[in-house]
Length: 187
Image 1: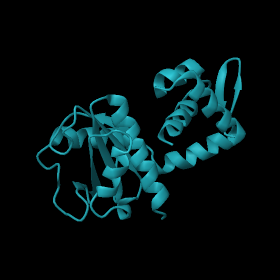
Image 2: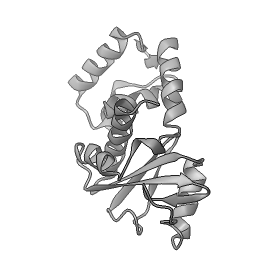
Image 3: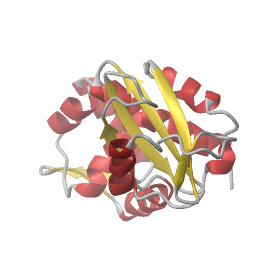
């Protein structure tokens, strides 16, 4: 699921994507990429020409809706709330309701190889842990600035930060956690 999401992101932002680009960016073999493209074609989400694979109008509408809920993500440096070698933050719009402690989001991230995950909520101009009111980044201006600049959080947004020993694993595990959070919690 997170690999398909990343593939759809690639297609959304590029007019055409080659199989080789998918293989490189998704860390997937040629056969797995061909199968993924066939599934996307079968669902009417993508099509291919000699120039590469592209999103159909149905695929574009689907991605616009998905990106309305997951509009931004970024890498962040090791800090007080994310201590991994590589850390990836992903924002879920208005999903603060979907966590009690962040354990569920951590478990979804670990499924894809993360060494850990931290869930924070943006409320009243502060980053807080679920069920807390203290600003968990009060003394970490650099991380706060990075999250604000790249994610542009608003009140009641959830941010999942996953940690891993490889940058791709941090990214794909964050995507997995975000997608599963959306799938298991409806607004």
